[in-house]
Image (cartoon, rainbow, N blue to C red):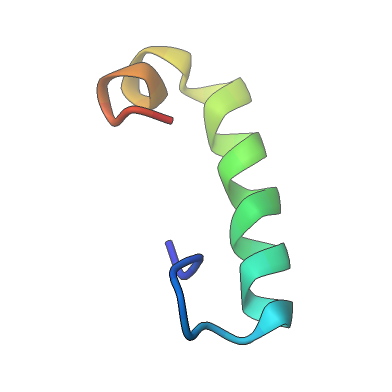
Length: 35
């Protein structure tokens, strides 16, 4: 996801929100990815 250094703030916000949904919907995959 585009949340690294140098990424526009708007993209970081969207990436973080997508990550939250991903973690809720796919908890096993998220844990394996270290989210």
